[in-house]
Image (tube, rainbow, N blue to C red; front, side, top):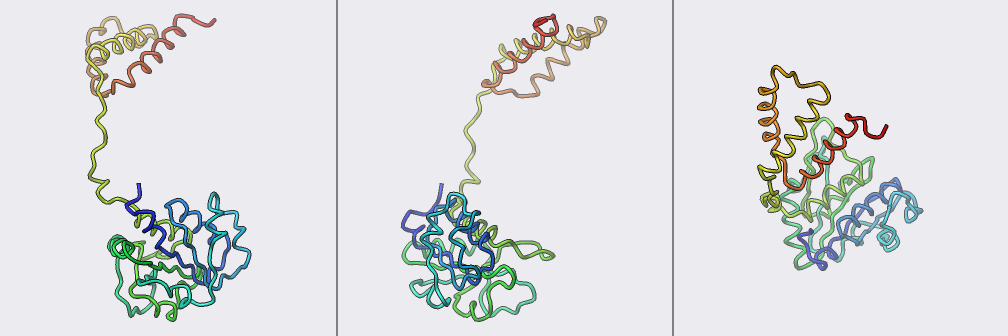
Length: 247
């Protein structure tokens, strides 16, 4: 579930600057649709046919309503916060640089009251120094130094996921799973032992020891109650086949 309200989702402008590949624009639109964002803006797209990109599966509306601009200045004119993305490389930066998690928190705060532009550069060069001059600060996805550049669609997806995710969800414990009752475990153990005996696995001279080992083994599995009937059915089918059933 998104931590952002519909109004906040609508206030984010994803701005693709000089994107060269229509498929990447389509992939970015798909990521936006996945996470509930709809305001796509493109600045000087390399291909004019991006609205038909096949990679925008399920995101046709995002592409259809995408706004085209001839400059970054026009694309971000209505925004009170402009954030650029960068892979760093050897570039000398003249802006504050935020890590993704912290930057996303700042963007969420601003989206509560006014529009925010999130800029992504071309696949080949990223954002130019001129593009960056319109940004208040920059944000970086923490990729490894040896391979810092990401595919445009993937970068958009990662950044948007960080914006909508609920950090507290990682601390919420899952619903407890009801464990199987001891009586049901014994039923399962008995069928397993019967199958082992029918298959020739059990040695009559060590049958008692084997039974104790199997009983301990089954209990170590910590089977949930919901799985017991499935396992019972499996072993019944095995025993039926071992006894010649279906011939």
